[in-house]
Length: 448
View 1: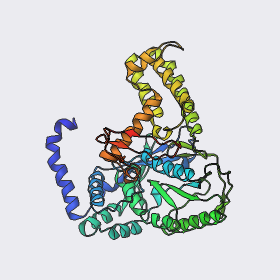
View 2: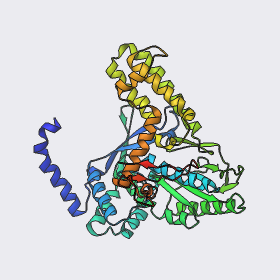
View 3: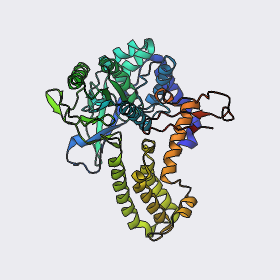
View 4: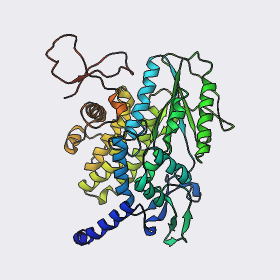
């Protein structure tokens, strides 16, 4: 119906949008949010309020402003290059690649590394409006544009919808709306100065929205590493307090990746009068990372979740057609196999054979064939590349984008064109020299 009457509605919608942007005023009706609590994970206790994510349903006006603000930040080069959240051509996979490549590079240089995954408590809900507006002004946003943001943040209200009931409206004095396209961008600008605090201690970092990863590499013989890490975390905690954000020490995780042939280390790290103990593995942006960078825990977790999904789909398979089963397994199972699979590049085939077995079982499930049926013609019919080929394809695609297309700057820095010492027949081909971080053998990758 809306598509049918859109030619009649568009002039009025355009007038409302242009009027808001030119006057620097957001109508009160557009500042009312309807919050729908969503359980963060199915396995969490639904009776615990902290296990829910408050997603706000908002008006469409913020999306238009988000596009204009993103263009402005891009033109003025004001984006933090180490912030990958909610940007074109950037994703959790590119963010994890940047982190893992730094860890691999340090390990090949026989340096030990520490990966710290910071956890914030209700990060979006505690954003101070005055501090945020001050940050926007420091980035050159002034005049009517600044007034629009001040009006957008002022006098906001929300109502919670739960089991068919709606609460009374409540005023919001802090926070950026979680669930809008503008909220995450404003939060990344709010934390723009955090990078300087981290870099001042000689740490590397990478962020994805409110997920912050710290990387610190040091010689195994360095006895000051623990004190330097604690000092950096203390300054980060002070910065968080000044910006009304709160670190959660109980959920902050620490991985120690020993250098090549270096013995494992045990560092005592303090944060807000709490001690953070190293763990063997930690979940980072949906990927389980271990302290040997083998990703064995990640493969095990993906295999377990895919088998559970296959079991449930197999129970309803008699009621599904082949086409509907294919759509179902591609959205639930194959998507899990493909998620961040470029991180598995360079691993031996026996490390990913469990994933290949999952793919084979999924192909048999689509065609409703018994166990041990030959899967090569099935994969060909479904147009599914084997797992190892999928990993290679993803790696080549990212390398191609880093050289020729849209890609984050931190990936472009990893791609180096091969320069032949003399004129060869292969000189005209676009060949790259990949960083030999995981193997001691140098290889050449061809990118057409």
